[in-house]
Length: 117
Image (cartoon, rainbow, N blue to C red; front, top):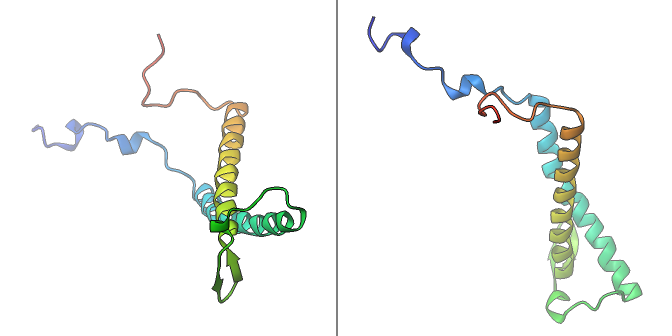
């Protein structure tokens, strides 16, 4: 037998790592699309409420706007608040995922980790 025989080939790392289920990929894709839409809607509501209630003074640079055919007039403050809400939303999703992952009791070490000690 030569070294090119399939029985001598080392097991590749791909065969050790289990594949991700397609449902989880679909949920991740759905959240990647849904969270910015919800954040933009929340930002529009927050900026409108801020204009009425005057909670925080909006800088002059963020008071400008532009027109989007489907959405309408978009204030730069809407985009700034949208970015903040997206970061907060993804941080909350990451924290919730970490808590649920820990609660469900999956093993701490995978097949590629060396044993502790």
